[in-house]
Length: 501
Image 1 (cartoon, rainbow, N blue to C red):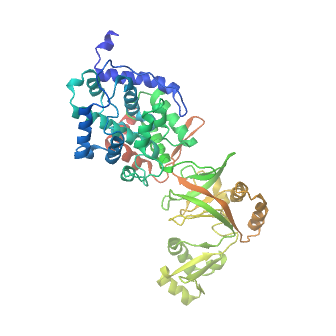
Image 2: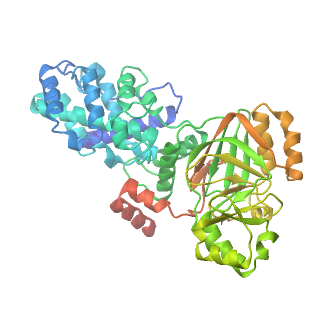
Image 3: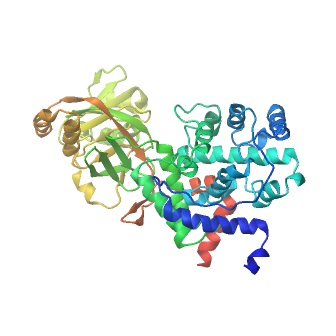
């Protein structure tokens, strides 16, 4: 105890935070109803409607002097307008708990795969909090207002980062600050959470609810809390791996049921139904022609499909073979058309025209056992021209590395996937029709009454049986995202730590 008294207050605050965090980690989960106990600073005359503090907050917002340092300036302004410019955190002693809980969460953001530097760590220090509550006369109203508003901005950023991620390509910081995220508003969530007993739990409920994310978050909590070190140490390689993939899952949005999720690095497709999850192997695009990350809805699928070959494949790969051997067309069930859809007889004269102006023509492959789309293709709108389809090259699914296509995604046991979709759609009677059409290469279209959400993900790791399962970063995307999240200096620090070990 004698040693503890000699520790600077800021260090004591961190010690208290760590001790409290240990209790919290043991008690708090996504559905936890328990709460930690926080230190009390003693009696104070601070009250919520302190007129000088309110005036300082109003002045700062009116003159927008702090707008450049806020991550979400418009959201901060809306937060204080809701309360009539009352402070959000500098309140009476009985309400200090919310302030402590907010600072604790921001101190331990590494538990959620986030970076401490994004939440005003230089402004929100324990020494300032100590002076505000123990020596309030030594802190000016402007300083108090600045601390209060910085904490508000940090918490709004924290909530948005938990839900959407820091670098969401769709819901950017500007869009979120303008209130353009339907059904989710961080300052409203923060305001409502502060009025409830389970403040921390309500804030943390902003995280994705998917099982994949939950397992990653639990693993991160263990690695950065109970097992390796405290929440002030620099993240190491495995922690960074988890963090960047948690960020990607926040971009992905809610996990719907039923739905199809394809993870590119693991070469797997998961069909999520109310009663179970089915796994399928897939083939994805090569590094030179990567499969994109997208979200769409699957509306229908067709048997015995014909294939309009993408222009790049036609010009760079197939046309040289056709010029060299015109019989290649008939052997592989291809036909050449002009851009108006008129069939072109592949004689010597016409092939010379195609060779001179290949952009004016395209080829189609008719249905059959050699068709590149196989016996069934699953259709969904997307700007990339990507299909999910069967393939005649079933032997490729025996490979461990399956980045082999031009970008489209091929699925093993496509008939089983189609049958499960029909059953889930309430059409089990159509399964026999599907089987016959696939066996005899007969064209049939099956339209789903309820369209199925489908999305591709790029998760370079997952949690399997409580352990991190790493996948090859086949498109070399991890480093770029890590640098964007943490910055080059922190990335260099991680590399240095790794080399020392």
